[in-house]
Length: 130
Image (cartoon, rainbow, N blue to C red):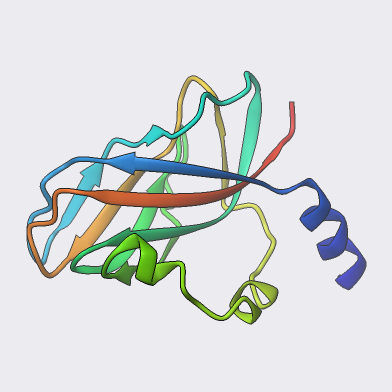
């Protein structure tokens, strides 16, 4: 398992994306994301993500053609504060695919927030598979 994780880490790509949807407090709100940079054409596996917004509680991914919505606790606060974390946290990540998408059909994300945030940031760790 350790050897497989090392192999996957070598192939990981990081995609930063943002959304500007007004979140409904204490309810799941779907957010359409826009990548910071153009994504190379192809198929990708979503390995992990970090969701950030001012009042974020949790977030889950909506992947094309997939019923299951993998979710994680989100990070509440500013993006700068969210990125000021102990890097050991990412050593403990599970590196199992959460689902698949293409450069044309990006995943959407649902945020559960305690406030009506208007700026959402997603960091996605992905592997290009085709």
